[in-house]
Length: 377
Image (tube, rainbow, N blue to C red; front, side, top):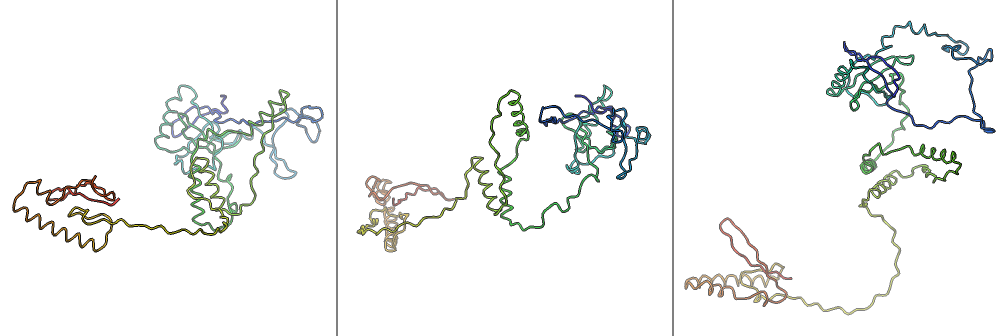
């Protein structure tokens, strides 16, 4: 890259020789003016309105228009005599946090390159100081016949000079915003949800599609081929009638683009159905299957609700069972005989089909015992 300016960066007693290089480039397509009849180039000549003659660059000077008919000539010698300390140096004036600089101040950025081996150490020193302190250096410099304000910040391993606008160059935003309007919380929530669905992105994936289309047209015409017809972009709709409906539609479209399903179902109007005469059907007889108390082992209660009479009978069976257990314990029968006396041998296969058997273990602080439960299927 070709440097556009050379000088030095000075902060305190430290001086860094530098070269200023453009950090951006313009890829806009420029056109020349031609004569539509024969295709000839249109040329502009600098002529004197008094003599009506073309002039060379050596014959042209500068002047300031103080009024409609008053021009004040200003020569190069007049400008060179001005006391301008920033003519050949970028003087650092202060260091401020980056968030204090409003991006509306930012102008064109430029890379600063150290000029020679002597600039390597102070250049690196300034870069490390800016990185560790997380601040930017506010500086003044003179360039193209005027003094400018700039900010020195770190981008990668290089120091960037960001041109800043002066305060009097920033226009006021008063009267730009619309008058006060009422917004509901639901509308703001829908807008926030839409922002979350759109989400972040990689800026590098965007490209200038219009420039690419213009280049395709130029290339086709240069090769003598008719340019391909492109689909016209959809024109934006006019006035937004319902802001909430537009937000919901945008959220739904964003979800569909991301492959997500919308939780809210669309409401459709139901068409009335024709009434058909009801067919007479005989009611089916339903029989309730009730469990007999004799089918249950003593000390076990069904897990489904039963009538009060069955509960009373169940309680009586438990009391009788406990009495028989105490009477049999006096005779000290064997474990097999005692279990058969209290719990009749009954397997799940012999039970009626409405009962199933499951075992569970209930624990307490004193002991762990086995409990058999019967449930109605």
